[in-house]
Image 1 (cartoon, rainbow, N blue to C red):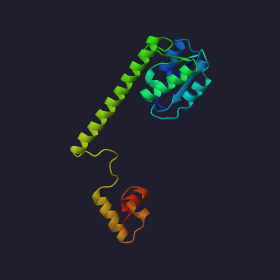
Image 2: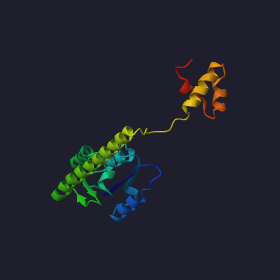
Image 3: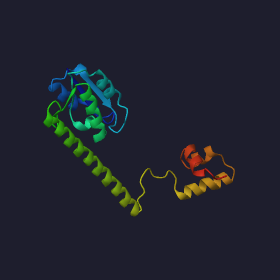
Image 4: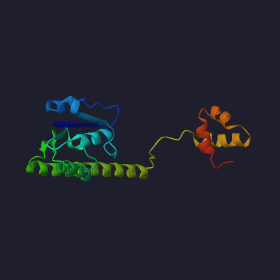
Length: 185
């Protein structure tokens, strides 16, 4: 039996590209398991369900290798689990079919390149963030209040005004005022 697995990273993404390809490859749409969750998440309920459902002689099919595993070691762990159950694996995009020796080799090579690509992206992102910091660019969400507004809040608090009044007068939330005044009497 052919069992399909599709994964998209966010709720907003649509899995149709993957599921259509799986159906075209011969997977009955009732045998397609879909997760809408980031690939780095350890728990992927539908993948676990698919892996439990697979029996000897079945084939697990994915649209692309990176839809299945978080890392090369995770991919290899899944593949070893499949092999121990006498289950084959196919990746449509990479043309990998582990029921053949060349397919196993391609699986390992493709997985290594996929992990290498993720590491390069992570390295570039880190370097970009460090370069921005050196130029004085601060990442993240901008401060809700300017330094002048924080000083106004402190002065109003000193004069005995309540947090709700201060928040309304500065057009912000009480949580912001509490955060800015934490440690301030």
